[in-house]
Every structure is written in structure tokens, then in C-alpha cells.
Length: 159
Image 1 (cartoon, rainbow, N blue to C red):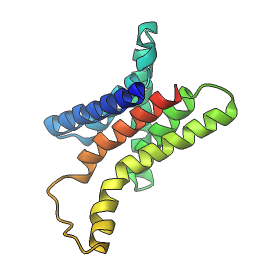
Image 2 (tube, rainbow, N blue to C red):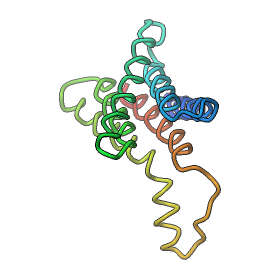
Image 3 (cartoon, rainbow, N blue to C red):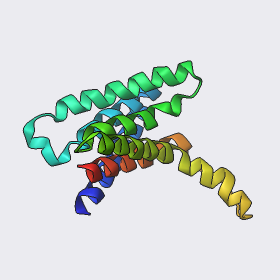
């Protein structure tokens, strides 16, 4: 349980660092690649001493960049986060093919829910309950933090 909480916290910190880079450089892709790189490193927290964390960071950044361009071609750039979750979920799961497919599905859900839960709550659930739905936050920036945290927690769970 501590490992999962640490994975969530460090993934959320990775998202916050990405938001900082995104706002500092005023370039969306730079912030996204930063989050992908750091979440890739966070996915290897139990085995950082083996020295593979750099490779996983590059892999995470490359998946986010590829997902970014694929999403732009499909007119849905948020595709990068479910892809990153699925990719890290498949690679972090131990065991046979069944566990890897399950890990990919959990990672995909973590990325999908992480980026889309806040707009769902604000734009669908609160108005359905008759509550005010006006908040002063950016869905994408807060979604990076939540998605990073959920993907970090899922990869820690799968280890």
C-alpha cells in the first residue's frame, strides 16, 4: 500500500512539474513530454538502483510525443495519456500474457480517467445534481496531475 501511495504521489509531482514547464515555456508539448518522462521514471521506483530509469524516462517521453502526434492527426490530442498508461501497464506487469493484458487495460483506464474525470464532474455530474459548475481551474493542467498520479499508482501496483 505504501508503494502505491508513493507511486501516486510521485506521479502527481511529475504532473505538477510538467504543468510548471508547460506554463514556463508556454509550450504544451514540452510540458506533456516532461510529464511522460517523469512518469516513466516513477514507474521504475522499486528498481531505480538497477540504472534503467533513464531508459524508462526516454520511453515515457517518446510514447507521449508519439501519442501527441497521433492524437493531433485524429483531432484528439488527449489520446497520449491512455496510450502512456497502457504502454507502461503492459511493460510493468509481471507474469504471463494475461497479466500483461490486464496491466495494459488498468494503465489505459488510469490515463483515460485521469484526464477526463474532472471535466466529467464539472460539466456533467454537478449540473445534474443542480450544483454550480463554475470553477477557476484549467482541465488540462489539473488533468496532467491526476493522470500522472493514477498512472504512477497503477505501475506501482503492477510491480
